[in-house]
Length: 142
Image (cartoon, rainbow, N blue to C red; front, side, top):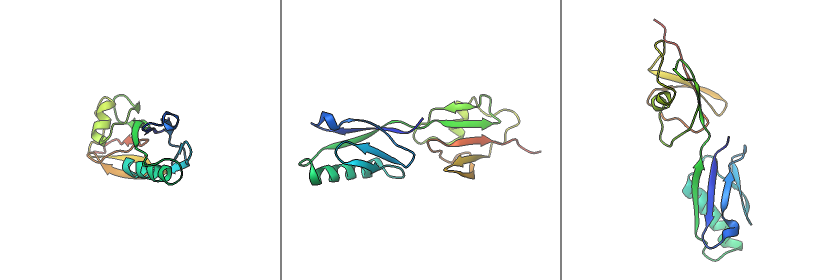
């Protein structure tokens, strides 16, 4: 599963539609081709699409970009129901664990190991998560 956006060009139904963000972090928009999306805000992507359409194709285009679907989270380790769960904007590790039924009795509740963009990092329980993160709740030692 990948992140998906909806690009709306008002008054131009042929340019309106959903686009998946590919592995290189780009979406494809009619007439202008690839637009970098990964690591950018919705406003930045909208602005680039508007500018590129205005330059060669349309006069003062009105563009809106909406997030349709995020990559799910994977929650593993010492939780009651490990698995894949939907991502919601602004979600923290603690909230993600709640989706997985909460911590089990052996869980370390203060921090978690997060696998993100090919890296392994340790984050506090109140740290935000990102779409596609794999969260592993470790066993506590005592």
